[in-house]
Amino acid sequence: MTNVAHRPVAPGLALVGDAALAIDPLWGVGCGWALQSSEWLTDSVIPALQGSESLSKGLARYRRRHRRGLAGHARMIYDYAGARKLTWFEKGLFATAAQDDRVAQVFEAFGTRNIGPGEMLARTVPRVAYLSARRGLARRRPARRLRAAPASRDAGRAAAEPQSASAEVEGA
Image 1 (tube, rainbow, N blue to C red):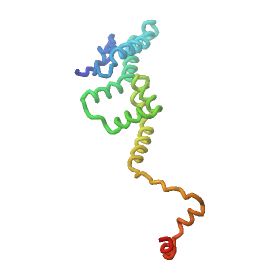
Image 2 (image 1 turned 90 degrees about the horizontal axis):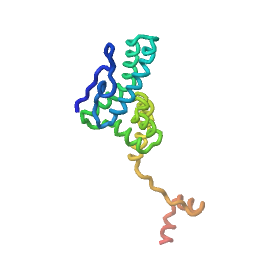
Image 3 (image 1 turned 135 degrees about the vertical axis):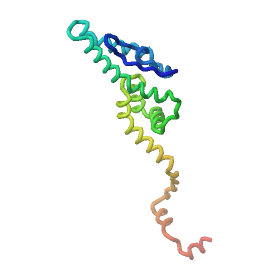
Image 4 (image 1 turned 60 degrees about the vertical axis):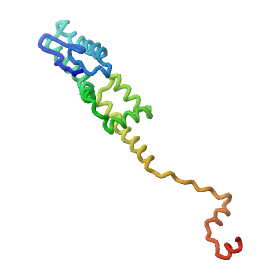
């Protein structure tokens, strides 16, 4: 499907939902964005409908709100729509979100469109980088062999002291 984006306002006209922004249906945002953008439109033009300001001012407010709320999400969806491979960061983000509750909660807030891409990145990049580096270091470290602890303190000293050649012969 071709992604289609129109300016959400024109003189005396406002577009909501797919009329303003019809994008890849994989993400399932169509109905949600239609309802959300209609709410933003309503909130933006109420003063004009009450006669306290011009309609053009209310539509300009709606245009800004629409862009602020959806432009970042739309750019990310456009980017994925080209069927490109995931970046190293995206792989790290998904892997970390599956294992870490803090990153998962931020990722959920982003996925449900309660926060935008900028806030999601600001809140996850440091933790994803830290946990990914920690996982990478853990994979590179050779397994440490544990030495058996000596049975007693004296036995430990005896094991640490070199034995004389005569002791070796006597023990043989």
